[in-house]
Image 1 (tube, rainbow, N blue to C red):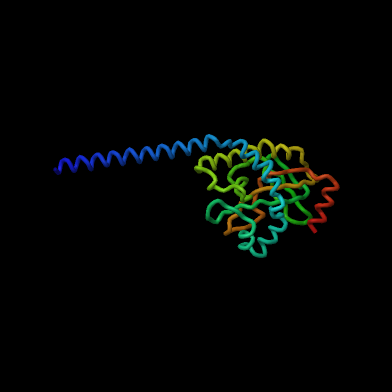
Image 2 (cartoon, one colour):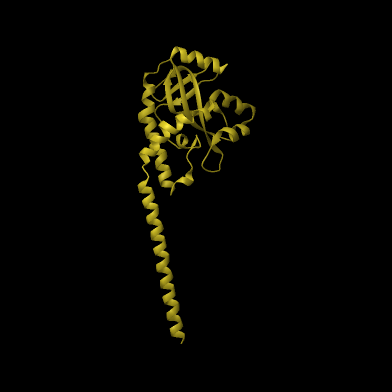
Length: 217
């Protein structure tokens, strides 16, 4: 009798194990299928060339952000920054315009009136700022972090290939306009130390520069 009971228990354990692995395998297959169906290239291009330009009016002007960080850094972070997880480091998407005051193979420095110059990266494009700063992409939309991280790499690659070359013809004295992303620590929110990754970059003609000067006053 006891042997028969043990036999039933053993068979039940085997059945439960088979069911578990069957469910796990099917779940894994669904994840792989959904990841395979997602076109990272198209997703990144849509983000950089459609979503970012369309959301431009929602991004904070860097002059306003500079002032907000000085007056109340905590409120500035709460109002304008984004991050996919809790922590001290957060990201900002900003717009701005100015005059090129210096260039080298790695950066462009641009200044608006008497305000401190901002540094735009033209070589070292890495990290997750370009993906996270706008707050337009949620990690929950992806099946796993591997794909989420791959998207960040693809956006950075597009910036290097499509946006950075625009900077090659800039020289001191030229006027420009940009939309860019960067990160700051809530414990040390010094904007002068930030390097901005440009997601949009354009040269300003004379009439555009006059309009920008009026807005900056």
